[in-house]
Length: 276
Image (cartoon, rainbow, N blue to C red):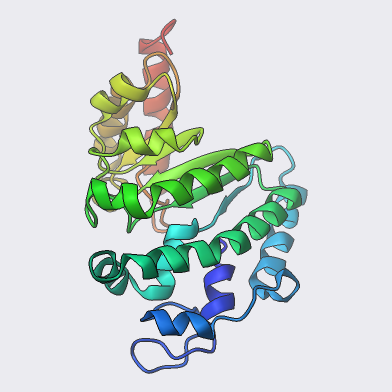
């Protein structure tokens, strides 16, 4: 997971709580704060150096396994620096401020993405938890996020990398916009899987969407199996589906629940033979 751009710009600044920040979160509260941001120096980004070392170590340990690298896109970095609540406030009160900060962090993120891909990242995974319908309207997404996402994603695709968008939360009113951004896959959480498969299954791979906590962690293996099989039978016909939790795989997940997911996927393959 790489969040080095937010850290580079905001670490050492005072955050909204009056504390000296280590992460950079919540340090840019108003337009005049942008003047506090120093020019980005890719040679002086400690988290980037650490991330490159991790990527290389993973490839050395498991050369046949793809490496996912998680990083924030420009809108997510702007949201982190401003703090989510403040980010939403200025979408309404000072839209120019939101655009200015998002543009400010754009090129540094492009530089970092290039380094991460050159280091051996196979799949860049972009989480967008604060940009979905749970938080902002479709119109706000189109105004403040879409243009930056498309530009950033296009750069990644030009590097011949694979790109996965994590549409965290409810994105059912804007999956068409997410698909238009050009990623190879959508990792979904609260999707209407049948509708998403019908409308966009031929354009993008779908990944998800077992509830991480209520099913994967807290349910028994039989429940995990039943829910996994249902997901596969809904979204796997015709191919282009990856069964997974809707977010991460917590370390507390029981082994039998993981095995139940795999068993369900194998059984779905048998049921969908010739159509999967």
